[in-house]
Image 1 (cartoon, helix red, strand yellow):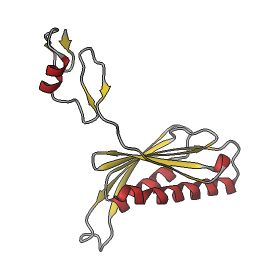
Image 2 (tube, helix red, strand yellow):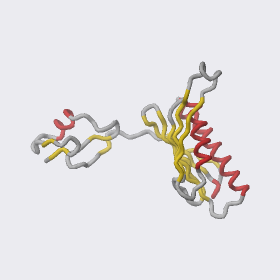
Image 3 (cartoon, helix red, strand yellow):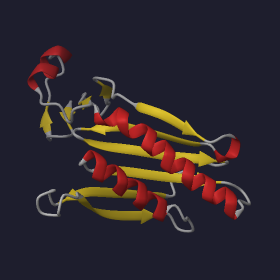
Image 4 (tube, one colour):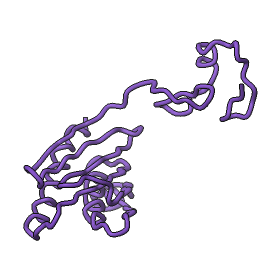
Length: 170
């Protein structure tokens, strides 16, 4: 049997325990098994979901740690999806920026979606407060939404993120 990650032969009669103890894990959450089968080693803690709004104007926000950084999902409306993903990274220090943490944000948007500005705003807000890298996806769609409903969805998303932040600061 061949270890496809390292290109070397594995002794088929070697026990899995011996193999597990001698091999370095592929990453913190998974370990390699012969034949490319991955198995969960430990559960990743989830924070949330935090819900704001009701019915089709309900927004759900949840987060997962990734080392010291955060992966965040903001979804809602009639059809939750991934419309945009923002990566916000803290820049500078309070001493360099007159007491304010700044951040750099890069955004990817799915064609035809308008979730990018909200993703940028929320990721930057979380980045400044937590002083960590934030990967944040937004997917909110309400069929035939009126201007007032769009404003309410944005407000609900902002409130949900604000409600989630104290849980992540611990």
